[in-house]
Image (tube, rainbow, N blue to C red; front, top):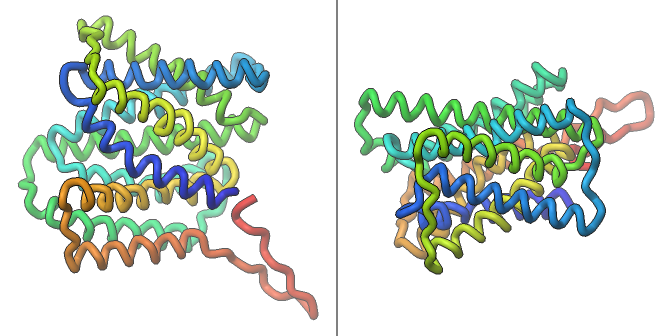
Amino acid sequence: MNLSLYLLTVLIWGTTWIALKWQLGVVAIPVSIVYRFALAALVLFAILLLSRRLQPMNRRGHGICLAQGLCLFCVNFMCFLTASQWIPSGLIAVVFSTATLWNALNARIFFGQKIATNVLAGGALGLVGLGLLFWPELSGHAASPQTLLGLALALLGTLCFSAGNMLSTLQQKAGLRPMTTNAWGMFYGATMLGLFCLFSGIPFAMEWNTRYIGSLLYLVIPGSVIGFTAYLTLVGRMGPERAAYCTVLFPLVALNVSAFYEGYQWTAPALLGLVLVMLGNVLVFRRKQNPVSGAASVQAKPVSG
């Protein structure tokens, strides 16, 4: 089950870049984000109410959902999309891939979880691999004050993403399932960003064509309803640091899609980067065994539930 959810998340989030690209045009970026998560929240609430699976929440639960909405469905998207104006998407992917390391550190700080050396090693290896994958894009980008601002925004977006992971872990420890918390989180995130657009004078335009509507629906259903539910379920089952290795793998899917649709050419450094990313994946999910005690040997509990 965990493997299916993991592959589903990687495949979905590795292809959403196409839909995000098709969103650019008449509709302002913040407004497109509002449309995406408002519709996703509506779909989730409809599913939960029809199936009678919407869990009740107290004031504390709603407060955490509000914070989760701010981190996962509002600020981080604004940070990444704004950063993309000044730094290459490859550099954003490299910064975002540090989520594995940030999640391991934050899980240690907030939940007292031991930082597994294989997770840190695998995350670092994946980071180097992504650097090689995007090296032509990174080496051809000149440093400037805008570059530093873009890097700072990308890092802030990654930290917000990691904080959202911790908040989801907290909710799941309290017995709240991701579908319920995502529904409320997306609602709160869309509401806060919608109010920002309203007070900033950003017009709520709409582009009524197949390209925009189709990409919006893809971002709503697979990208948000399915993708975030699958990913945050993994956070609860596998731990935030292992689940976050998705952030290293989905650029690989994006590059393969780009090779098919846009003529991306694989180079020797990129292939070496691919090997390092996959080795990092093996390290992150390597199971540890307990020492043998006496005549009997006891296997360690698997990472996945």
